[in-house]
Amino acid sequence: MTTVLTTQDVARLVQRVGLPDLLRRLVDYLEADYLRWAEFDKTPRVAAHSPDGVIELMPIADASLYSFKYVNGHPRNYRFGLPTVMAFGVLADVDTGAPVLLSELTLTTAMRTAATSVMVAKRLARPDSRVMALIGNGAQSEFQALAFHHLLGIRELRLYDIDAAATAKLARHLGSTPGLTLTVCASTAEAVKGADIVTTVTADKTNATIITPDMIEPGMHINGVGGDCPGKTELHRGVMEMARVICEFEPQSRIEGDMQQMPADFPVTEFWRVLAGQAAGRESSSQVTVFDSVGFALEDFSALRLLRDMSQQLGLGSPLDLIPQMADPKDLFGELQLSAQLQAA
Image (cartoon, rainbow, N blue to C red; front, side, top):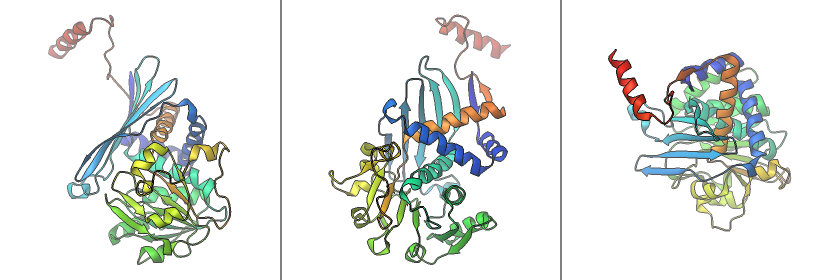
């Protein structure tokens, strides 16, 4: 049997353990898997692009488990009452190929993206960082905000979005969060001024320059989340040139991240090397750092592992006859006949 986790199951899971604790557990699972980097069969995601968006498959495997995520990115989906990002994923047993978990990943992707941002910021942002600018206040913004508040000690959020309604939504959701001050700003430049960390999580599929070199102050950490496919950027190339740049999986990031606008020999460091102590993270308090985050399949693998473990502990999820259960595994046609007979009865 395959266990199915719906959006309601994941929401119940979060309610049972609390979002801060779930994010902490996600960071733990992410770090454990990133430290096993060499054990994974890795590949850039496979993308099908259209004028209004992209649909992607993100596969990865180690010696025991295989996972993939189906995910889209359609910034104009609001016109149809649909989320910009929708996703589901599968976790399968490598020895047999049997799918053990089929899960929603729309909510979970937002949580694993926020957890990944914090995991990297722990090594790149200054330890005394307390103010974060959050540029783009859409679907993922609350998750980023709460992850940085609860796990990294951010006390003030400086908010800006070209859509004032998005900022109002974010302020409504987070306005009563203890120990967190929200400051609504009139421009990106105003939000960024004086910030220790700048998180960009915009949706438009365009080569944008949301953060420009004149906005950068010594010691800033830029958490670039929104640039995640060819033709979609958020950072001026001058910002990249003045910073130490960390990415997830270089072959993918050079195609999809803000790195796509840089020459092939532009120096970058994969994060697993920083985590393993093979490369430096932040090298000085005045250094500007950039996490060119595009999202990588390993992060979904970690999230699916956590969902599997926690759903078993909490008794969540439902069994699904996704794969035939046959008395004779070689008699597939007989299973078809039996299923037809049962439906007719």
